[in-house]
Length: 218
Image 1 (cartoon, rainbow, N blue to C red):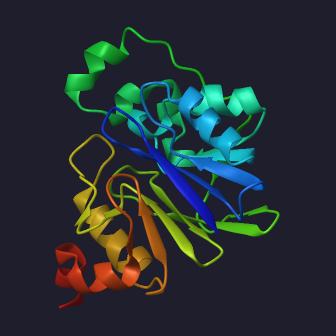
Image 2 (cartoon, rainbow, N blue to C red):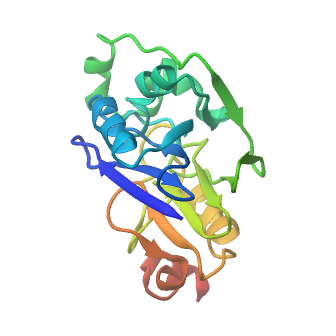
């Protein structure tokens, strides 16, 4: 599996670009802010990739800001869980008060081909099988993606040594604990985890070392 990433300048959000190999079709996940579409386009060209879809793990702007120019520029569909879709047009509902004054002065639009996801939905792109795993807690529509039972795109659910915050609007500590118990802990140790921020890790390592997961296993 070919995996590369670009950390967006604001909040260092990982935008993941994944394909079976260089020169093949690829997916773009969580293109952040400010507009990084030119940088992602350059990476796509460098590896002779063909984008076929954009995916968003949740509706926060640092994961969605560049999705419209990329998706519309390539003429490809975009996917997000139905419960976070509203934040593409009105991101104020998912962010804290420090963001609201700035957001109120901006106009937001969805990509032209916008599609809702639900838990357990399978997206098949040639030799990639992408399973949507609804994982609320960070936001109500947070979603992880398992790809070919090899990779886990964890968004802001699971980080190396940490988990996502739950104190923003639509976040829930109780929902996050349930997600960790029912969605994360049952996953295969062999999964390579590609988080929304920070370095990659594995389920095996996090199961043994992440204090939030260790606490739930006691």
